[in-house]
Image (cartoon, rainbow, N blue to C red; front, side):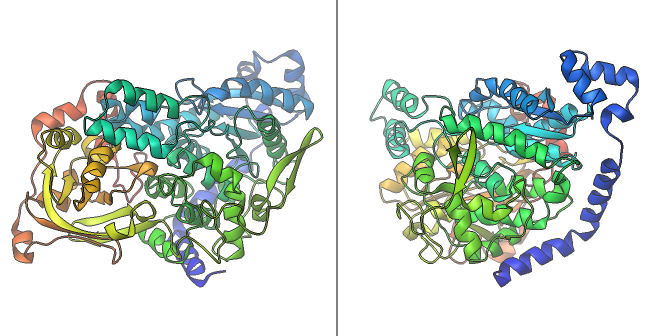
Amino acid sequence: MNPIVNAVTRRIRERSARTREAYLAQVEQSIDRPRGSDRMGCANVAHAFAALPANDKLRVVVERAPHIGIVTAYNDMLSAHQPYEVFPALIRDEAHRQGATAQVAGGVPAMCDGVTQGLPGMELSLFSRDTIAMGTAIALTHDVFDGALLLGICDKIVPGLLIGALHFGHLPCVFVPAGPMSSGLSNTEKSKVREQFAQGLVGRDKLLEAESAAYHGPGTCTFYGTANSNQMLMEAMGLHVPGAAFVHPHDGLREQLTREAVRTLLSITKARRFTPIGKMVDERAIVNAMVALLATGGSTNHLIHWVAVARAAGILIDWTDFSELSQVTPLLSRVYPNGSADVNQFQNAGGPGFVIRELLKSGVMHADAATVSAGGMPAYARVPQPAGEGLAWVDLPAGSTDPSVVRTADAPFSSSGGLKLLTGNLGRSVIKVSAVPDDRHVIEAPAIVFETQEQLLAAFKAGELERDLVAVVRFQGPRADGMPELHKLTPPLAVLQGKGFKVALVTDGRMSGASGKVPAAIHVSPEALAGGALGKVRNGDVIRLDAIEGTLNALVDAAEWEARDAVPLGDAQRQVNAHGLGRELFGGMRRNVLSAEEGAITWL
């Protein structure tokens, strides 16, 4: 093992000793109980199984057959989740074939960030993660299950399902993906049209035509954003059937992978190779996920989400851990926005299996981490193929079949990972360096301060930003307005950068997995509303973002900086952030949420 990875893992273990011990004690208490239908009163049992066919009632109550709970994030608003409509029937059928039973325990909300980008609904996006976790808990609190299958893919849904499942850590759990949509208009071409629209060179009709050609069918969006990063991390944590992440929803292999998820879950219940999720997700699994994120230049959202996921298992991590791991993790893939390839090309070039094999080989992943597969982590370095009525896993070629998309650990795109921690007098933040051209890793320019993304867009349209600048967009943190993603700012800033100006974004908001070629210091903590230093920045202050040294500073005289008062959020904007389109219902979350580096958790 790499000594730095070992040291970070050991530090996490030591830091988390008290909270992990308390968590595992709770898991053991739940494991030691009798089965649900034996433990519960007769009326409770009758309610639980009232709608089951008679044969299933006999199996689960009398024969004590394994009973699977399905928690589904199905809706057909999300293209990625639309295929889940048919999964429960498929799962029940396979459960019956294996002598088990299955019920849909509950559904959880799943919002499409692509629909809500730049709109008030995006202010509920981050908080939807903890809402999903609570929904998962409500589903599983029926408490009659021997294991759970979790159906979810997209941005906040997988972290929410995982947080919820970890609060039922005594249950074996398997995550069940549905795969990406087929390739449409390339992500590069789509971005060009967006920039042309921002400049007024094409109209809304051309923009809609391009967007519809890019997002055109069932499955996950094909860029390497948060949804597809989720799938990579589930593979790295051993929570999928190996190789399940990026097979198309309508590929015949997808049905076999879903059936295999049922068989895998049944193989890790109490009667078999018992592997409850709370014991499986330890510090090694968390570090493996972090390394996989860094090695693929994945979503910056996971610097928030995985802090919360780890905390749900009693494990404490922070951005320094990510930063130190990044220094020794090779960048092994380039998928848009870190390159031109989409996830289908990534899959064809070897996908998660190739990356995991190389990370294991180079000693930056824990090969001894527990997984739902009997083959352990090495099983995730192979790829599935049909074999009769089942599956077989085969080795990948030793070398890359497409070095523009994936590379071996001895010839990486970069010797360090795709994310960087920035610190300085503006606070702590992160930048996705894998998507930023090398000549843009250091930006020093005067600040122009905005308190909403609409203000920046208006200034761009008015021609007021034709210069070197650092756009400071504050009051975008969790407490202020739920920390929305600010993707609408990428096209205008990219246009300015394309004109030769030095441009950067500094914000306490998010940009997520689609962070692009404009350098962006995001998740600045503490946020402005919590007294963070972004509140001190004034128009014209020179800001230096240095992704090489890992610093973010306002170049203001220290005495003057110390004496400055932070600008408060105006009452009018505070009211806008608190009302309309359901935002009132999330007021308690805004008031109680922890910082971005603490996982933006609302449940502690």
